Length: 114
Length: 114
Image (cartoon, rainbow over all chains, first blue to last red; front, side, top):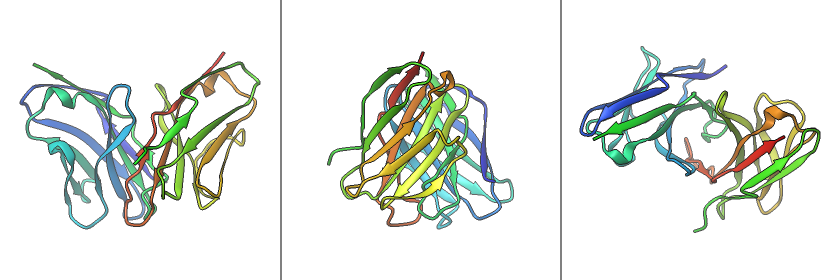
């Protein structure tokens, strides 16, 4: 069965600092991996997705993630945090080509201080 | 283009009752999936419908059911409600035309079971 583990339920950074949110996956088949963000009182939005085309994936709002098969990881990074990045971030995996039926991690809440 | 619409926004029910939630996908989207979000369990996949057929199913008891109509609108039903069913229920739609298709999420229905 597929699963994802997000290390750290809460990450705090200063504005301008590097953001690193960790995600490890478990899958017996080549996975499709996603990062979604949930802003307060808003629905989930797709940040980026990995579908085997390239190991380094660039998303919206300056985020990117690197797929590392040897480490079974798909960590999310952003070079410089902004106050508006404060939100909950979810890593997810799907074993179907359509990218539906997502298995989500528990989520990581990112706080950004000035 | 209108987004994914979920109704009602809030529901309060008592144990033992049943409830029906509605989801209208983005026009042209044929895939609709449902997720349950709780503070303890996070986001969990319930089921996915595509062209009126259930295509994927999560690990939930039979009290949880759904259906999709010919216009792609979907409903989910929970019978014999339990306190633990209190959650935010999210619906997502996708066009399902390519690899790792982006899911568009609604704002959810907040169900409280008393």
